[in-house]
Every structure is written in structure tokens, then in C-alpha cells.
Image 1 (cartoon, one colour):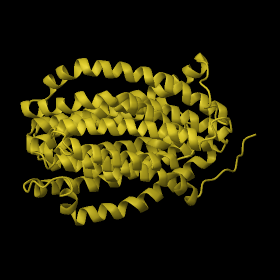
Image 2 (tube, one colour; image 1 turned 90 degrees about the vertical axis):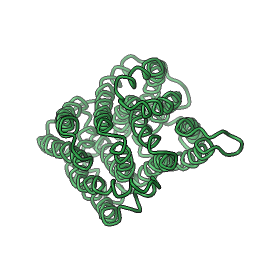
Image 3 (cartoon, helix red, strand yellow; image 1 turned 135 degrees about the horizontal axis):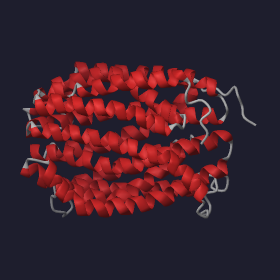
Image 4 (cartoon, rainbow, N blue to C red; image 1 turned 45 degrees about the horizontal axis):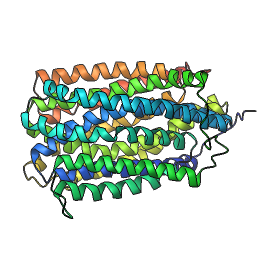
Length: 446
């Protein structure tokens, strides 16, 4: 029997969001660690880590996108009270994602050198980026597996596991990077290669923590996690029907981000280094946004599972208001005091003033990015992954064309290049809001 009057208060939104927020912030600190350490190695290492880091994220987002689709299904089953099937869905997602991880790792090791040769013009940047990629991709399978655990914890609204995991992962990453990048405790200084190895080892630690937490803190019998289920083609087809769209959507989305950095790299090593700093600072704000938007997505999925379709718009408005309340003060602080934030990532004097205009542009773009991502995640939470993919594809096409004209053809100043974020967000806000308020998602069965 479904409950039609289920509502989520601001307190409930916060109770689910804050562990996601803490975990994503800590994960951002992991990226900050890499950038801050490499920003003290050289400008080439800093710029190369931008390209290599986004290149790795392109590969990682394939698995993460798949896990987001599984998360939507788990959230729906959790809302229906069908807890055992939520666990079975988790296992089927894990079956697929492990095979996917092995395949992509092998393909990357074979094809990445050729891809970098074709795409990156600077020899120094290319060689440093490959040092990072070849070692970082080794940990892809553990990253994919951790993403599937994350999908289960968020989908079932048991998000405290994310906080525990992220704290351990951050401490591991800082230790590994400090030892391997600069060379301590008798280990030779490896520079950018050490950053890749350190992050890979931290990913292994993250996976182990998720496994231990599930064994110690989750009612495995209730969710059917205490034994491996037989492969069900019916469940696997459902998982693939939803997750294939979120997987492709996330891959294409982050690929356009990689295209942005490739275009910027063509304008010079200084512009690339500035963009890496701005990207890292942006990540702090972005992870807060994603925490609230992901909460909105899983609550929408649970709400529809309860049968309360009419509450979706009101819930989305609450999440949007809450997100603005948290992020806007941070944007004001960053805009008024940009230099201290920039100096977290580099001690190269020339890069600090060069990065300020781009950072101001980025902060302004978040006024549109906040509703864009909250609305989009709400669309995804309805279970209509195909429509969500189509909406973002249109926005990404506009984004790529804008980047090509402004960066590749016009060779604009790096601050002007960052206006592409506002263009993408504006298109997303318009399309996702129209879709949500149209009600075309009602009655979508998954």
C-alpha cells in the first residue's frame, strides 16, 4: 500500500544531504590535495594534471553514470518498501560494473598514448599527462565498485556511510601524495606520477571501507545483501534500460569538459594552469551543489515510489531554495577574497592575479548553474533517463559550439572562455524547468 501524503521537510532534506555534502566536500579536498601539491612542483605539472585529471574523469564517469541509474532504481524500490529487491538491484549493478571496469581499463592502457598524441600539442604537457593517466587508470575498477556502493547508500537514504568513507579516503590520499609526490620516508620523489599512484591507492582504501561498513552497519538480510543472487535477465534488462542512458549522458557530459580543457591548452600553458586552479576552486562549490541535487534526485525517486507524484515540484523548490541558501554566501566570500583561495593551489606568483578574472566569471555563472543542476537531477529522479539524456545533449551541443567559437576560433582571454559555463547552465535551466512543470514524467514505471 502506497502512502500518498509523504512529504520531505527541510530538516529531512538536510539529514540526508549533509552526509553526502560532507563526503563530496572531502572528495573535493582530495582533488585539492593533488592540485595544491602539484602547484608547488611546476606549472607544467599543474597544467598536465588538469588534462589528465579530466581525462580520467571521462573514463570514471562511465561507471559513475551507470551507478546513478542503479541508484534511481534502488531509490524507487526503497520508496515502495521492496527492500530485498533494492539489494538484488545493487548486486546486478555490481556484476555489470566490474566487467565494464576491466574492459575500460584494458582499452585505456592500449589507446590512451595514441589519444594524447593526437589531442595535446605541448610535448611537456603530453608526457606529464601520460605519466598520470597510465597509473591512475589502474584504480578504475575500485573506483567503479565504490560508486556502486555509493549508489546503494544514497538510494536507501543511508548516507552516513559516505562520511566515514570519505574521511578515511582523504587521510589516505594526503599521506600517499605527500610521500610519493615529494619523496619522503626513503621513497623517491615522483612528481605527477606519485599523485596518480597516491590517488589510486586511496581509491583502494575507499573500496575496502565501503565493504567493511556494509558488513558491520547494514541489515544485509533485509536488503538481500548476505548472499549473491542468481543473475536475472529481467532485472539486468531493467538496470541497463535506465543506467545505459545515465551512463552515456555522464560520459558525454564530462567529455565536453575535457574538450573545453583541450581548447584552452591550445591557447597556451599559462591559460591551462589558470583553468586548472579555477576548476579546483569550482569543485568546492560544485560538490556542495551536487550533494543537494543528488539528495533531491533520490528523494524524488522515493517520493514517486510512495505514489506522491504531486509533491515532486514542491520538493524540487525546497531543494533549490536550500541550495541557494548554502552556496550563495560561499560565492560572495570567494568573489570578495579570490587571492587566498587561489593561493591554496599554487605559490607561483604570476598565476595568482592571472586567475582572478576567471574566478569571478565562474562565481557569477553559478547563479544559473544551481537551478540547472537541481532541476536536471530532479528530472533524472523521475526515472525518465532517456528524456534527461536528450535534455542535456541539447545543452552540451550548445556548450561545445560556444567553446569552439570563443576559444578555438577567437582565442579569447581565459576569463571569457569560462563564460561557457553560464551558457550551458542557461540552456539547462530553461529546458529542465519546462519538462518538470509539463508533467510528462508522471506515470513513468521502472
